[in-house]
Length: 465
Image 1 (cartoon, helix red, strand yellow):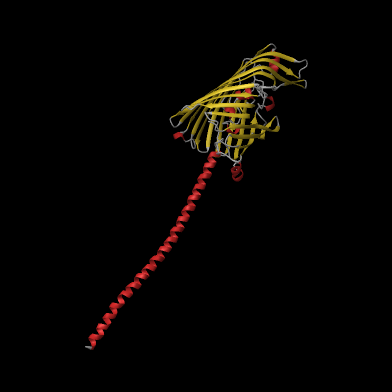
Image 2: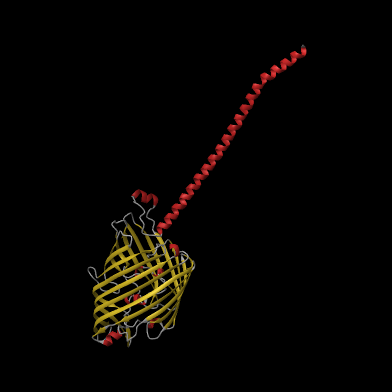
């Protein structure tokens, strides 16, 4: 009886204690679960924070990449600018570009004796100096002035006649978002005559200008004035343009109260599939009142005689460009062919200033020429090219001796030149070029070798087609 009582008491106590033990276990589990929730909540918050920071870095990197891409295609509208946003964000931030160019040149004939029979050379025409020399080095500042205008100025440093010269090569403003396909440019700029003329020298495929550019423009035609272009809203690229120019610079000349020269041009082009593209251009330049255009002269008994032309001058130009790139990607391989034909007609008087007695002749001139060149990038860092130039002239006058002294008598000779080049391109910002010319511009053929380096520092706008 006593034993049963003890067992009954123990059983009752255990049954009573079981809910208490179960309650403690549940509470412990709840506490552990809460701790896990807090711990994982902190981990999740930390991961979310890291994810947000990573996304912000990616957005910042994308913004910088887009900004760099935009700066390479100037002019680009940066958006409306107010006084407060401009001062706070420093929106007016010009892109600065420095082109470093230098060369070593070796000629068989002396550069001082260079001539193009049938052409009176002016501007910067000529071979340049022998040996080491600074090439056409440029410093350019450009930016969107606001949402309406873009501005650019270029200073050029180069060697000419043994002297280092610094000049204002370009300085212009250009409209942005004018609408209806129109763009207006005003200031000093390279004319839209021809294809190569608008390109800066560092963008050329060869180290020197085509012979016809050397003979007609003194390498390049630039002037002060106003240019208007219109691009039609069609699938095929159609551009029309016109310029009114001061006419004070070679190949025009003289001081004019209004426009002394004008230009009109038209370009049409397009794509053939993905890999091929083309461009065809036709242009005309005219100056009706050229006054005292001077060019290279001769020396007789120590007296310098300089040819001076006064009269009317006009130039017609036809150009064609074809490009190929596999799958439309020119990064590793690409091919480019370009050709231009130019014809100049002039009527007026040529006077040999400095002559005694003063010599002059009536002058009717016809000068023409063309070049064709091809460049092939066969590896990502290697490129090669060939070029051929040919000139002709038919100049007449009342005094053949004066024409000969002015360099306008070709003496039955047609200047021509054969060129080949090889380029090493370590990156898109640097280039080392080796070029050979077989120059038959004048009677004594010349073998010319040019080693050129061109390096680009800072942001640099995209080149034209």
